[in-house]
Image (cartoon, rainbow, N blue to C red; front, side):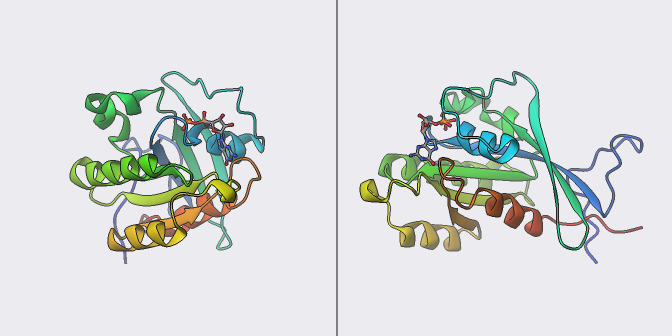
Length: 191
Ligand code: GDP
């Protein structure tokens, strides 16, 4: 039995985390412009609205999903607030994160290189049990594709990550992304 208590709030009255109701901190990393805010808005609000930036300051947006085994997972999704531009601040941002979603844009090889930088960074400094997802976003722009699907698959496989291509614009695979992450979370032991 897995006895890890991931993302658990140590105060016993701190949020009702138990084996059936998980609460996890999720961070998104990746180049500016790859669509991180749009992915979050699509997932949380069901909208694609490039003009409305997620401006949550020191706080986060949260969204709960229910899995088939009646477990619920509440994602607390932290906005980067531009911190991806300041590498030195990044550890403050992903500390304590149970999940890191590393995003690139399939039309931008540079953003794919940057994603690989973030993966290495998380492997070095993130929690050892962190669930890592690699996301190729803007999959709707297939005519402008410059990163092959197979490159994403291969890199993710080598690094033990989950991989998916999404489109925040069409909503393709957005819910699937978060559902797959939820399935991969370590479960606290039912006591
Ligand atoms: P962030 O800097 O990573 O948070 O990126 P944003 O979420 O602000 O998105 C940057 C730009 O990419 C915006 O102009 C969006 O309209 C566009 N964008 C985001 N996701 C998609 C997508 O899935 N498809 C397309 N075609 N454009 C997208």
